[in-house]
Length: 440
Image (cartoon, rainbow, N blue to C red; front, side):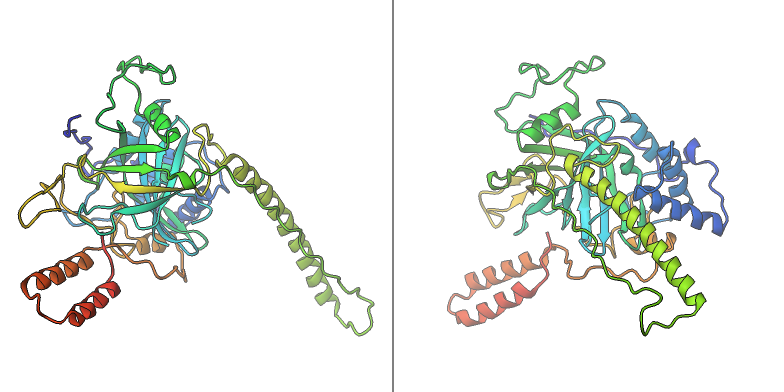
């Protein structure tokens, strides 16, 4: 198949959509709006117009960025979402999620309830639902990396409106839009014929285009446990293609949910117990505390029942797991170098390396560097705008960079130029290399 694919044309970054025309608000109004956004994201508040609410919210907190920073206008963001509000929509979003417990990850897309700096990748497969993956070190961007693969962990099926979220809270950390756009599914191999013939009777042709819709291809690829995925985003380069495959050892059935423990009962002394001396005010305070505790326990039971239902279906309220997603299955994610436009050199100094770059090498550098493509904010700025203070992030996340590979190349060149030098010196260099942060 061909390697040329036109990138989606998107509006400029400073255009304003009619949905976000009235964005002026006082500091108090903005604080209330931020609080509401966190409540909606956590599922504790419901609204009718998610698109209108979140686009207005994001327009009030957008920041200017350097000219070379990838940006998608609020208008383009809204139009992209609207154009996929149908049963054949094929929208994707990658959230950078800096969670206090799970740490940073990148979702292709994770849950608002549970995840260090990680990407959440979400792929729309129906009008209302998206299959989601958590990618702890972000997407690969270096074809010659010594660490080309990533783990991509399946998470709950999400609702489509979760693609609009960019917010934060102390409990769940920050969530920003790292990239968004539309996806397409490529054939599993070059021998496969990429036709629109519905020979197996499972896929249905789109009557408008007379082609098999991309979301139907995704469902088929997902269930075959091998997905060749091309992402047409704002930040990601043209022709960017990855492969998701499920190793045989990870093809698990859904796990049984653990039973929640009953709350521990503690015997309480009566007011007349010997040695207990309280005033009437203290007694009233104790009674009020008991009532509050009972209310919290009741709310906790309701929340536990809701989460049990979520675990059973592996889908959040409003989403439907018709694709057959299994929570916590680990997929293998890798850069599809050939379909990205790279070719392997078989001679010369570049022998064994992928050359003729389809795009310039990039690295996912983490929460301190990566900005939202919609608002231009860093993770810390999302926290600040939402009024989150004293947030303690999980440590030990390290980006996968290039310096380790370069050091190995230096060692290899030294060995070739000075074969008689004592090998102990090279071992010391290699030890240094092992301590060097590994980038893509």
